[in-house]
Image (cartoon, rainbow, N blue to C red; front, side, top):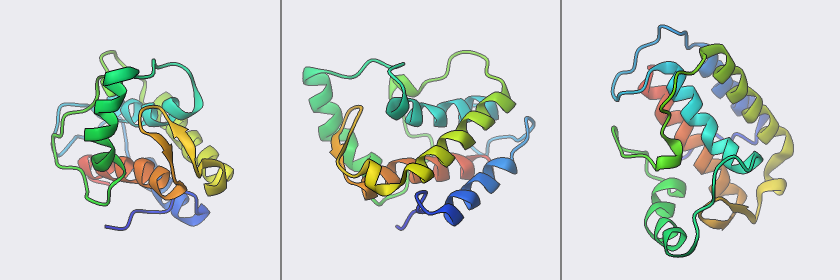
Length: 152
């Protein structure tokens, strides 16, 4: 499957348009997260790139994550509904819808402006160096999955 190219301004804006279609009352079509938790959950993918907020997996844990999860995360197949998430992506506290929405849009805009060259061969939190295509798939597929979850 082909994913939106979030390094492309037009396609990034299309994804932001989908995010802007969400409201605090938007209900999921599957899963347990509310819309604010989903936005916070999607922000984690960018926090792993732009902050040191989350500990990096090491040793055997990193090896296993890379071995078993990398193909799922950066491969072409869409995520299955109700797929189990990594612990770092679990949102266990109350989140503010507007705050999380603004943060997510800012992350998408920053990533688009930095462009593919910035990400090509950039180390990921758990998967080692990724190509710009793999980075785009990581971001785009994850966002698409959760935006579909909430019907946008």
